[in-house]
Every structure is written in C-alpha cells, then in structure tokens.
Image (cartoon, rainbow, N blue to C red; front, side, top):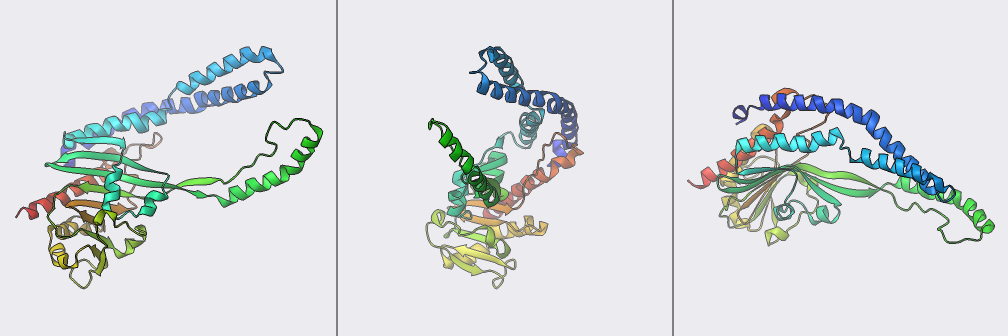
Length: 347
C-alpha cells in the first residue's frame, strides 16, 4: 500500500511548505507576538488609569487596535499543524480509499464506551477526550474507525495550591490594615487562589473499530495480563452480562492473555475463531499485544502507549516518507487484521 501512495513525493511537498512557514514562524515569534503582548499589556494599564487621565483614551484606541490586528494574524505553527496537516493527510487517505475520511480531531465516544475496555472511571474522571488523526468510513463494505485517542483529566497541584494559600495568608495583614484605613468595602479584600489543577493525559493509544457483524454466542474481551492495569475496572455495560475471567496460557493461546466472556461455554468457539489467528498473524508477530473486545459482532481494539505518530512541528524537518510510514503502517496492519477475520469467517 505504501509504495502506491508515493509518500516520498508527499513528504517533499510537505517539507517545502514547512520551510516557508518556518520563516514566517520566526517573523511571527520575534515581531508579531511581542507586539501583541506589549499592546495588550499597555491596554490593560491604560484601562486602570484612564479614569484619572481621560486623554489616554486615544492611546487606548491605538493600543487596542494594534492588539486586535496582531491577534487576528494566525500563528504559522498553528497553520502548519492544522490546515496543512489536514490537507496532506486528507489527500493521502483519499488515495488509500476514496470512501475513507480524515479528521484532525474526532472520536466516536459511543464506540469508546461500547468497547468495554475503558471503564466508567475513564469517562467520569475525564475532562475531555481527543481523537487525533482519525480515519473513518467504509472499507470493503465494513464500517471502520482508526484513531489515536487521548483521555485528559485534571489533578490537584498541591504545591501550587498550598503556595497560593500561603501567599493569601501573608497578604492578610496588609488587607486588614487597608480595611481599617479605608471606608469602602465594595471589593473582595483578600484574593483567594483556591485549588489549582494541572491537566494531563492519563491514557493514550490507538483505538480501532470494525463492524464485522460476527456471529458469536458470547461477547468477550481479550487483555494481555501486563496491560490489565490500563483497564482499571472495565465496564460491563456494553457486554450485557457479567464477565468471567479465564487465563489462557493453559488453553493454547498466547501466554499471559486473559479472556473475559459472557458465556464460558463459548470458550472453544472464541479460541478457535479467526480473530485469534488474526491477532497472532498481524499483531503478536509484530511484538504488539492489543486489548480486544467483540460486542454484538463488532470488533474493538486498542494498543496503549502508541501515540503521536504524526508530529507536525514547524521546527522539525520532514525526513522523507519515514515521516508518514509509522501511521500508515499501523492503519495497514489494522486493514490486514480485519481482512484476515472476514476472509476466514466466510469459509
């Protein structure tokens, strides 16, 4: 597939675009951005003193105008990461299959929930979810989705929170004295900083979905034992029934996998299914151990800690076709995985 895409040509074209934007990025960083921040700071200062010096209104108009004009100039690094990325990736994905669509930031949260390997805590504790570099559409009459997914959450930064509280305590005498010497009580005297939170990614990886319409008597979940920690308490809502666990090193499948299924009597059907051989032939041979579930005939796959395949950094040189290949290779692997299942299932 990669050879047919002429990724070397795409990479060369992208590098030419990056070089032009990198020059503009330098001008923006050292000219436009400083002017914007200076104009913004001046405007804020004037707003505070304009009551005492009304003639400063004309300077506020000038600084405000400069702030608005420079603020409307788009940052070249953002242009590169968003519009340029979308243009190039859309063209590449269309060349793979015109029925597929590329989106910068998209994820089907219904599929994420139905997969079952993301527990309710993932959604309850999440501030937001981002699906980077999303491919969706129809492949060989099969609805699919392929994306890098990131779950973001907030945690309390205790050092900053404690520091803010201590600063409030230190300022307390000053505001008490000011209150005794002034007659106004219209403002909140003491600035309370409150709880300060940091935002970070607590799960990232590839997420893949294919509606293969498989005929199984059980919904099931396959998880490598070393990756059980990523699942926390996985949700059973999508499975319809409680799941029973079965260690698989005793029944012939890859060592250290755990099978969770809604019907233990379907164990033999699952282990002899085309899915098991597809996992072995496409992922395990590549030293990858995905988490996989089948719910109502639909296949869901995630591979933890596989993120940031396409680093569109305006300061980083595009090193030929190798820039795109990791991402395209993983999509091609998923394509082969689904094709292997459907071809064996039809026999």
